[in-house]
Amino acid sequence: MVPFKSFSLFPLRGSHLVLYYHRVGDGGAEFYPGGIKSAELLQAIQGLLELGFRFCSLSEAYGKAGSKKEFTISLTSDDGLASNHEIVLPIAKKYGIPLTLFVIGKCLDNQALAWNHKLIQIRRHSSEETLQSALSNLGSRFQISEEGSLSQRIFSVADSQKDEFVDLLWDSFCPETQNEFLQRTQPFLSAAQMQDLQDNGAEFALHSHSHADFSRLSYPQILNELRANQALLADYVRQPVPFFAFPYGRECKGDLIPKLCRDAGLKAALGFRYRISDNRRQNALWQRLPLESAHALSLEQLLLRPLARVLKPR
Ligand SMILES: [Zn+2]
Image (tube, rainbow, N blue to C red; front, side):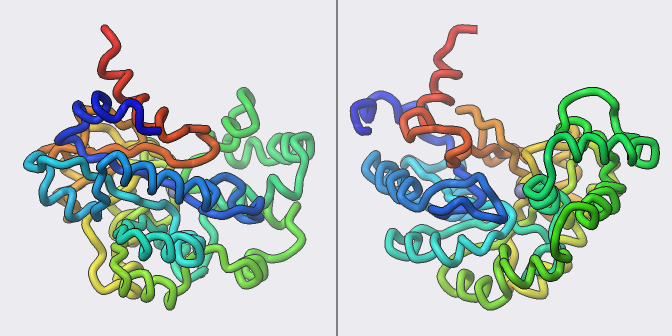
């Protein structure tokens, strides 16, 4: 893991790295099948520490961006899943890592599922065929695209109708109500877990109210998503930090981002497409790197991929 130590880190100086994951766990989770195993998280943390990185919160990184002489990295997680408390917090405490958690407003304390989480359950209880035929039946009502893969067709439903759409599918395919499912599985952080995380140095930031696709929302809708997220989060967290991670990494138009940051009182919005020149103080858009099995990235690839992009002649 260390052989590229001497040369690979040099271009990273001054560019703060931000990693993200969703669920950490070892079994095939019923709620969120993707994610990273706890041993992989541990290995990545130990490897990064060995390489000379220092973990710091996103707030600290933002405050020092551009001025630092060290290699810093932040560990962030999206959606506010309970594994952050059950599995990640003990690891974070052991290694002194301050977590930054991007949470979905409506899902806080297991109050509701976001539409994409509902869809995971619907897909567990249906087949490709039965879903395709359900989509055809609902096609005209929700203006579903007739072309493309199942996912593309589902994503073609307007954001304002997605919950209504998946709620119908839920009722057709899932054996229990959404409330029963939430009570039984408790997939999101509870109020007490958020409190404990906060008491142990974790900071909480925004991931929208409904996990909407921001590339398809109007500016007023975007602002509403953030304000609703801020309002609900304030009920659970002493001082949310002014950062926002785009759901699915789908950014709104770039020229809207500085205005959005001003209007919503944010320091930066975060996407999924890290390049070595990113994460400078003057930028309203910061970027992150995935730390999840689905991307099958070893630590070397994780660090070398953005470097390769920089070094590649254009
Ligand atoms: Zn998300």
